[in-house]
Length: 67
Image (cartoon, rainbow, N blue to C red; front, side):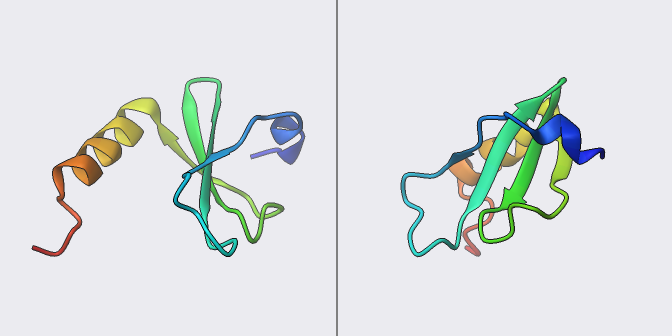
């Protein structure tokens, strides 16, 4: 992904983030971009909006809690 498209994006992170060990997300042209807040210059992971919604739904449902 050409990093010039990332200039001016609004990145969001969880309010539970502390000590800079966070994941940030931004929306761009129908995709969700995901990056490590400690390395914002690295190329972000890009996933479709549907994949992101499935991931968030899984988080809320406890799918990743190791139960």
